[in-house]
Image (cartoon, rainbow, N blue to C red; front, side, top):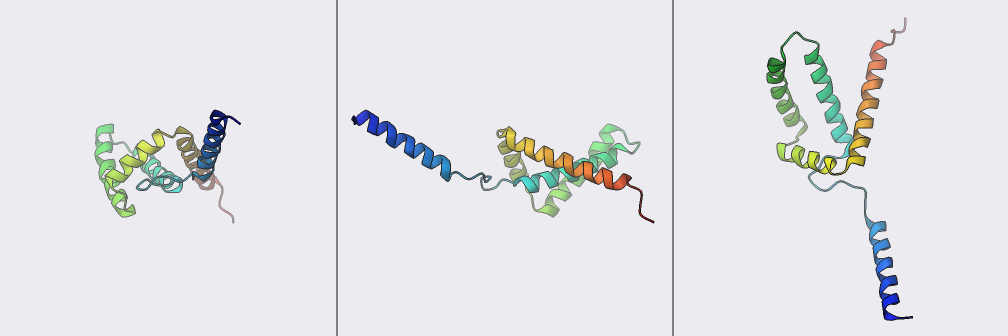
Length: 120
């Protein structure tokens, strides 16, 4: 076997080994899929509540921003973590799509439960 062929085989084994060792885990300082989807659900519900009021858009935004800040503090999520999380998921669209799928499923289920007639 030639040296080039041995080098190529060793390189392929190394690449395959590295691929197998990689985890599907988010980097440190980034919210995981479940945390981010729960956060999105709460934000969408808050926006929906504001959307059902007769408040104009600018005023609604002024009401939403303090809610967002207090909610993030309550959950222990800093601005830097949120920014890093958004950057990570926007650069990984397939993972972001999974998050939005979970958000849609959760909101659809909540809507379904809210519209079901209560048992007598």
